[in-house]
Length: 322
Image (tube, rainbow, N blue to C red; front, side):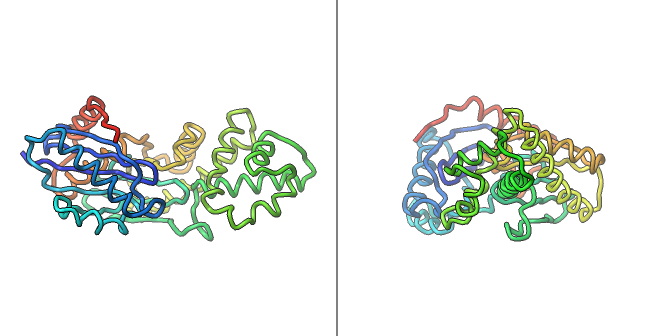
């Protein structure tokens, strides 16, 4: 029986899954980061190499994987280093969107809104081409993203100041995060070269904390953010020809829990009741396995049995920490 291996990685960790074509999980592992934008390419390649070899060593009598796919952003600069090893030459690097798509939906059609530091929406009808909306970056896009929520936070606090209102939970948390004493200090602090797009996106946690502590204005920012992202979803749905498609959201904004996912679900129900909200079903790691079987091997995964078996195996498999 053929076996396959997939890896999902980022700046701080990389996860590996080795499995048979029937969905039986053979081994899993977790290693350090592999995004060569944030760590040296040699280190990224070493972490991936170590993770793959550890999986294969767990079941040495098993047939080696027929295909190894990596879903790792920023790994292109480390790929040749990895392939230089004698047992690592037959490895392919894939767009990390695909494992997020399949992980969120569990099937090959539907719509996924990816909301992290940036954002975009992608989807397709059954057997149709992939269509994307958004992804234009912070200057004139990023609706529904952590960056956009950070901008909304800054605007809300400064608007409150301009209206002559002092204090407030959101203002207090923002000043503390920025390491400043007065709202007027934002005129300097927010324009420092070191205050990057990623730092603006981190303000999403400031908004979440304020909302949890009862700040109604912070909670409303999530509603604004979700409504903007849903507009992107509706634009995409129109291009796909409509219909009762499942819609899921994934990415770093999901760390805000119900403040974001709940607002997104409510906005979708108001704006496009014909679309069906579906909470993310699986991890991106499992999504990589589903992508491989559906797109590379032509397996019909619509009945969910393969996904269920992989999910069960992942839950039961010991996690080898490298």
